[in-house]
Image (cartoon, rainbow, N blue to C red):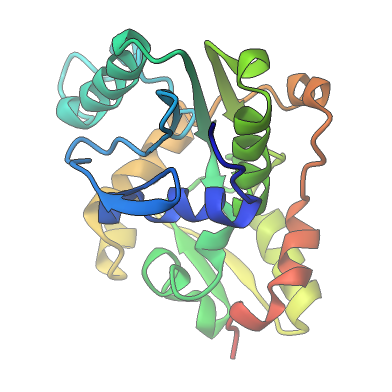
Length: 245
């Protein structure tokens, strides 16, 4: 029988995806996740795959796809991973697609994702009007646990996860209110963002968000009966990990 997985444990799977770990029964084992597969494998041959809701499988319809502006391997690998889960013969499988993680605004991730936040600035190539769908790790964990607790209910579903969609000026305003320190948004061109030291792949991802972005249907998630965490509530709960000098 499959053991019960806590929300914290399930959420940890998401953050361990780049380390190539997966939870299997009552042990943690190293598996090959070279293509970015994040899966939880159970003895009963159930599978849970976590990825972001980024249109993989519809990537060929992206603006500028034909000219190779977006990394083709990045997108096709994502789709191949999902297809591998679907055809692997698992008794139950569920694909969770979390949007942009709220934890990216907290340490230690913020030091890389938003290196200017400590100085009170969110500097990105995101347009001020671009709405970024956000989700907390705890919410991802809650959906993962639900999939384990009732696998038949969630079998065969691709669930795109987001709690709300905010612009960077709205994010900056919330962080200002929560931290009590001024935080402003600075919308840059891609060239300016690179000049400010942002990683090229992250800048290109911001360009993608301006043109395509995440696509979770937040109202549809209400049917699962799982409370979603607002960014403001998340920020209040993680105030100690949000560094603004």
